[in-house]
Amino acid sequence: MKNKLTQIIAIANQKGGVGKTTTVVNLATAMAACDKKTLIIDADPQGNASTGFGIKYDQRDKDLYSIICGKNEINRSIKNTMIPKLDIIPTSPDLSVLEQELVYVQDREFKIRDLIKEINEIYEYIFIDCPPSLGLLTLNALCAAKKLIVPLQTEFYALEGLTQLIKTLESINKNFNKSIELLGILLTMYDKRNKICEMVLNDVKNHFNEKVFKTVIPRNVRVSEAPSYGQPVLMYDISCPGSQAYASLAGEIINEQKDQK
Image 1 (cartoon, rainbow, N blue to C red):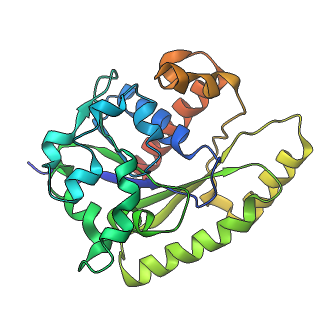
Image 2 (spheres, rainbow, N blue to C red):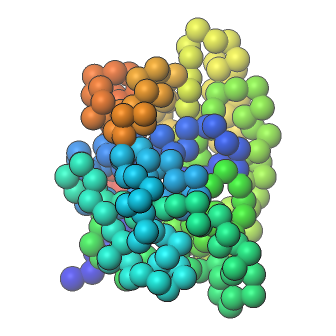
């Protein structure tokens, strides 16, 4: 029986270094810990989400690129992680050439959407990790998703790229995917000792009001260390502030979904 409640969530920001992949890895882990069957689609050619679960490059031959190119079936490309109820479709640097290869392909914007249709009844949540750009891969993710989460680092230039991303979202909503909407803006790398962080937090809340998550992700060294051990921070150190924040974010999203029913 098809799961009508599948939430397909893209996590995107064209600015790099904002905690995008960290959010995908740890939010998905937190969802699985809440007994939600969850899938990560690693759509960033850097493959950091795949690395974050300890998947070595020689284990990525059946990756997102090979599925889109028709060399592998999506069901054979899904890998289990060390987290119960959490799977991942890994990626490799091969994905970086996809944009050029699809230039003249019809409906190239819907490749990921069409792939997800084959497996979305299995999962309650599907998270798509996007590259730090607004190119074809991010467009594919936004055409497939029902919701968008924008991680935003609490720094001086944070709002500059956000305006462009919101305009892109509006354009996609109008021209490609009428069902996508902004789930929320997630403030990351927050340091309460830094006045700039406080200023950015207040500025974003003034601009976007209820579209800013109540949960704020703190700057936390354990979050930075975890990927080098091939683990989400919730496995590496479940008691650290970063882990607690991502668990809180998962609860916030689940509760919001319940309220909408």
